[in-house]
Image 1 (tube, rainbow, N blue to C red):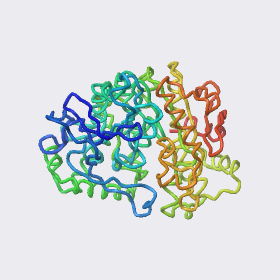
Image 2: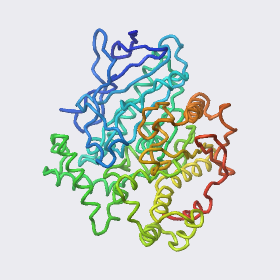
Image 3: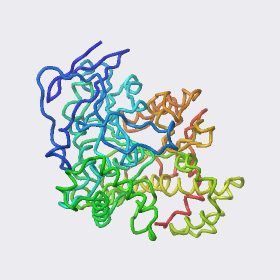
Image 4: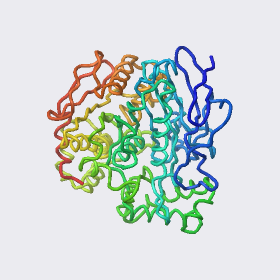
Amino acid sequence: MDITVSTVHGRVRGLERDGVAAFLGIPYAAPPYGLRRMRPPLPPESWSGERDCRRHGNSMFQPGYLPALAGLLVAAEGPGEDCLNLNIWTPAPGRAGGRLPVLVWIHGGAFRNGSGSLPTYDGGKLAADGVVCVSINYRLGAEGFLLLPDGTANLGLLDQIAALRWVHENIAGFGGDPDNVTVFGQSAGAISIAALMAMPRGKGLFRRAILQSGAGHHAHSAHLGRKITERLAALAGVEHTTEALATTPPERLIAANAALSQEISRAADPGEWGESAGGGTTVLPVVDGTTLPARPIDAIAAGAGHEVDVLTGTNAEEFRLFLVPLGIADHITDDLVRGFLSAFGLDAVNALAVYRAARPDASPGDLFSTAMTDMAYRIPAIRLAEARAAHGAPTFVYEFAWPSPARDGRLGACHMAEIGFVFGNPTDPLRGPGAPHDLSDRMRAAWTSFARHGRPDTDRLPAWPSYLPHRSVLRFTGTDSAVVRDPSGRERRLWEGAR
């Protein structure tokens, strides 16, 4: 059944089915192209009559994924200039009195891929649980995260703020409470949320935050941001000016970004490229001193975002998604593992012994994956919780430990494996057939309870205390959930004091 709702820019027509209405492809900002290319987002133009919002809008221009990841990660479809749009799933718009909690999803994809319209992110199941669910698009790659020569920076983050402002102004008409907004996101989406907590322009736009597999440690300095922009312009064959970059075809910037990634991977001194040396992405939020005044974890440690309720966590084997499909895991030796551990300031011999003691039958590739999971995901989440506790802001921490059956089960509880359970969508490639439905029920109940009250309390789970003082972590498995105190504590202690 078709249903319409009024927004500040005009009426939108959605589709209601089985008690949940979906409104797709609603513009929250003007198309960021033409004269608006590489400029901060502006409001969309208003329209007369009803806008058909029964189909997803355009996605952002992006490179897609490596062939080795085909079948595991779903590529976004339908790129186009009018890409700053959002989707809403709501139970009974206009009949809920505008008081339902709101969950706003910020997708991941290494800041270069992804879309809020991917099938896994369909919010219908969460809406059926009694929340209003929103997913958004934002600018990616060079379009969204360069520090431009004129000083403009973090356009992708400014897009996210524009979307949250739109939600604040309009969500009551869809049954949501504008004063009870929870942002939730995974990987680059979670890193974005930590940045939003540190940004003055983000203050007051959300009350709660759920960070899945991402924290506040990942950002470029202004110096590195300028260096990346200058080199990308050279690889694109254009002048190092904002005007030249803003008239370069998106496909050309995407190709230059890919070339830069390859160049960094072959650099004699990868460390000069900061976190881009890891190969995950060339672009990250930039500490420009204006839109983002400090590295997010440093701002949070100083008290930024202490008023925001936070739930965060990681998957037990995050890094296997990046090692197994590419065949890298089978070629790693103990010497390579020791070199990695040493590069991050650890006593390599002792650290390898600690990791191996807990996993005596593990291969060097398995140990490398575990250490990389700690360095890139688990330890940052812990440090986020510790930083907040210093300001009396409790944080709830989880671990997702259900192994994906994809690729003959070799991926384990890898990066992204939890998303299909959070949304309750069985078609997610990493979830696979035969996955435990109860696991999704438990996670959705925790996420929606947190959105309502700021605590993940539900009769489907044991009592879930905050991380400190006992370093309590709620572990999700396929059969049950249990609170574990200081899991992998010996490994955690290795990283104390490491950079």
